[in-house]
Amino acid sequence: MSWLLIALLGVPLAGAAALLALPGADVAARRRLLRVHGLVVSGLTFALSVLLAATFDYGNAARLQFVTDLAWIPGLDLRFHLGVDGISLPLVVLTTLLTFLCFVYLCRGSAEGPGQLLASRPGGNRPRALVFTLLVLEVGMIGTFLALDLLLFFVFFEVVLIPMYFVIAIWGGRARRAAAIKFILYTLLGSVVLLLGLLLIWSQTGTLDMTALAQARGTGMSPAVQTLAFLAVGIGFAVKAPMWPLHTWLPDAHTEAPTVGSVLLAGVLLKMGTYGFVRVAIPILPDGAVAVAPWLGAFAVVGIVYGSLACLAQRDLKRMIAYSSVGHMGFVLLGFATLTPAGVNGALFGNIAHGLITALLFFVAGAIKERYGTSDMPALGGGMMTRLPRLASLLTFACVASLGLPGLAGFWGEMLALLGAFEPAAGLSRPLYLVFMALGGLGTVLTAAYFLLMLSRVTHGRSTETVHVPALAAVTAGGLPSTGPTGEEDHEATPPATSGTTSGTTSSTASTAASGTASRVISGTTSTARSRMPDVTGYELAAWVPLIALILLFGLWPKALLLLTDPVVRTLVGAP
Image (cartoon, rainbow, N blue to C red; front, side, top):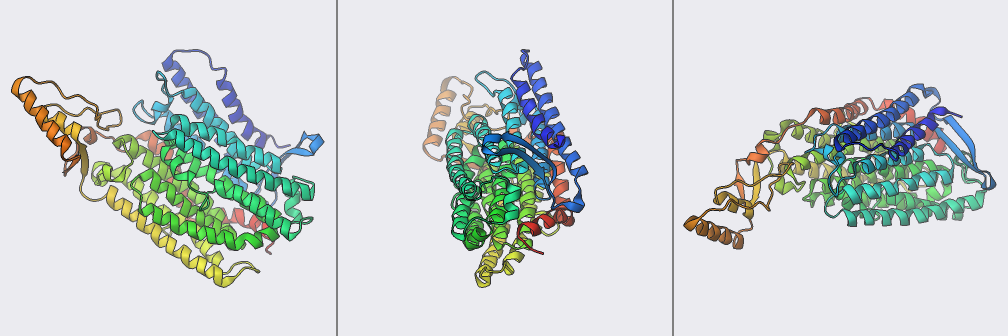
């Protein structure tokens, strides 16, 4: 038994349990305690994952290491079976890193910034519940990547749904309840179909051991049964990935989730779906994979093009990034659909690259929303390079990495997926996959188009901002619009009272403005509130710099990741 894998699950679980016995204290002391607790527990979990990576035998990356195999439910021959190889190790480290960086982002902010989520308020934020929820979420995410028993895998796969539902429903935006319900309904329905597929595999083979099933490569199951099972488990994984047309829960969930929720949803939860394809569906059901692969590739390229076109139509920054994930995960699914070492390696590389880049994008988008009070791109007004040059530069870097610029991590996954489509596995139609490759190439052009268009609107150009009628009325009355903690104008502010003729004139002017133009745009100037907006702060850099460094590292040295995944991929797809 390996104590390291047990500790990776036990530390965040114990940290969550400890919060149930949190001693009573005054509000300030409890807030400090929660910040320290979240940082220490997530930091210790990340340190354990680094130790796991440091002691991993890279010369035998295809072999399962640190294996723990204990009896779980002996009567049903179910086992608590954990292990890690070259596919799961990067995802475990990514999970613990992003969780730790989320706590850094939360815990080091001021009461006006992200730290406000850990500030108790009347009716309020439930800071202890937030820390508890994020730690339970981490347990489920790590367990999914470590599990080697199909039922244990399913349990961990489902554990993440409830915490993420509450992250969206409690700490999300105005439409958070609808987004959370949509998220849970889609994912639970997908999970039901997934469970049916896993039970079909169990009924045909008599075992749930993922290692034995992968080695058997479908022995005991006819091609028809494998195809049916692949469809069932594939639908379950496709909902989580998400694959077009099962993606419609994602934009709402990302738009309404708080920043840390969006980061973990895009950076880790989507990877659980794609990980299921490479860990369960393809190696255990090889004949089913060959039968369904062309359809998987077709849905993947439709998702690539559809996601890119949808991005071009978006006004909200977070929603645009959400739709970009549909396109990027389409490249991952296309790589799997080729059933070649190049394509599957590209898919796994794209998994990690997307986790790093999209996490950075959502961090930066959240910081923009906290400063401007909105993520609506026309309302941001452009000219961010002159107002917040460092934040605008980081947004530009993240966008350029996401569109696949060579030398950054986003390039290699897409390139290898397209290369795999150029020469698919035996038994697959090469002309069909050449069409897929061409459509995927069109998707890369559209990806560059929507990111560059967004940058031209938000970071470049002349600074403009929309000032709504109530604010103009307040200025006419001799006052200034009040501002909230994020710098957003408070449109419910009451203008100062005046007397006599001035009051009547002001009232008449405000009424005329309200009945005429809904809003006006003032160019070349910034309001007092927005001129005071801080640029990138120290705690933000602490949360973002590790992501930037890894995006550069894997972009300039892709071999660091490919040497880890390639031996496992060749074993799983049966390649020499």
